[in-house]
Every structure is written in structure tokens, then in C-alpha cells.
Image (cartoon, rainbow, N blue to C red):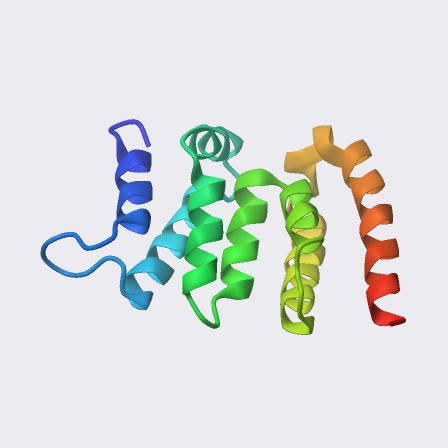
Length: 141
């Protein structure tokens, strides 16, 4: 992180077609997501730095082009941005798989890492209540 590692990681994840091994291939992007997860887990400073560099937008884009990577992407989004990030994306999920993956990542994040996001707790509770109502409305249709 201190020697432009964050910038290099985000650049590799969002590159369109760089020379050499193709970092946009699913395996490279998946590895980049895992690397980001390892960098930020238990390290709020690294998470904050990556957030300020645009990591959340980068992860959302990666998640959209990596089939089957939903949980890993949502977990990393949660590690970087906290449970509030997952809740806000959960509102946009249009299918059961997306809802399921998001809820699994949210439950794991709040169980394992909530102490890292204490400052978000009041807003998380408000957003969670809103999200539960939204999901209930969708499921009852």
C-alpha cells in the first residue's frame, strides 16, 4: 500500500487490455479481489486508503463481469466499505442469487468484522430495516 501497491492493484483490476498476461481474465480478476480482501481484512487504514482510491467502484465493475464471483466480490466490498456498502448494493439486486450472495456476505461480515465498522452501526440498522421491507415486498409479489 505504501509504495503505490493500491494503485497498481486497482489499475490491474480495471485494465481493459494490458500487454503480457491478461489481468482482465477471470482468474486474474478473482486473484485481485482476493488480494484486496487480504490487504483490508483487519486493517481499517488499508480499507480507507483503497476506498479513497475508488476501490468500491472498481469492485462493483469486477463483480459485474466475473460470473460466479458474487460472494467474493460482496465480501471484499464489505471489507473495504463496511456493511453499509453491501446493504446499499443489496437494494439493487434483481435476482434471488444476488440477494442470497449479498445476505450471506452481510451476515458473515457483521458476525466477523463488525467491530471494524462501529461508526456505521446506527446507519446500518436504519438501512437494514429499509432493506428488509424492500425484500419482503419483492418476495410477496
